[in-house]
Each structure stands twice: as C-alpha cells, then as structure tokens.
Image 1 (cartoon, helix red, strand yellow):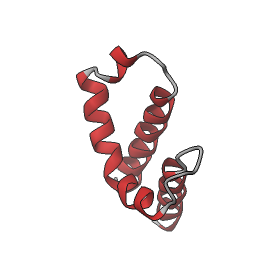
Image 2 (tube, helix red, strand yellow):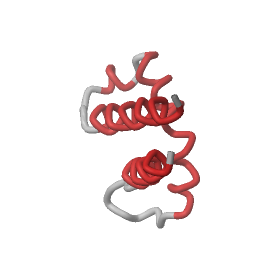
Image 3 (cartoon, helix red, strand yellow):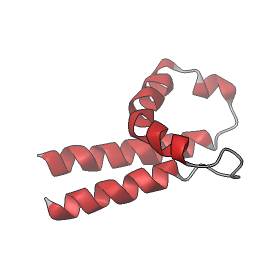
Image 4 (spheres, one colour):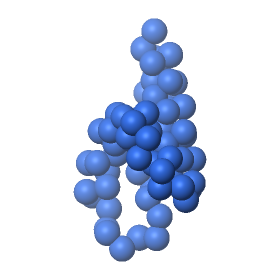
Length: 75
C-alpha cells in the first residue's frame, strides 16, 4: 500500500517536471497545476535550500525520486 502511494508521488513529480518545461503561463496558473505543485514541492523545498542558488537546473525532483525509489526497494 505504501509502495503504491510512493509510486503515485513519483508519477506526480514527473508530471510536475514535464509541466515545468511548458512555456504556457496560463497552464501553470491552472488550479490543478497549482495544487500539484504545492503537493510536490513539500519534499523538494529542503533539498533546494541545501543547493547553491546559481545552478542552471533544479535537481531536487531527481533527488526526491531517487530517495523514494530507495525507500520502495526496502519495503
């Protein structure tokens, strides 16, 4: 059960990353996308705070996905 929830969170993280590449600002302000970003950003904010601010891309989704995959492998 927990593994399935973590898999769903990983999928939501992938969706958020893909939406981040879409240049349409109207899509990014859609209520569903705003709620998705609020949910997915919870574990990413502490990682972003540890990283230097001048890196060219945000590796926090990749770190979250890797950590979740490790947790799933132990379950």
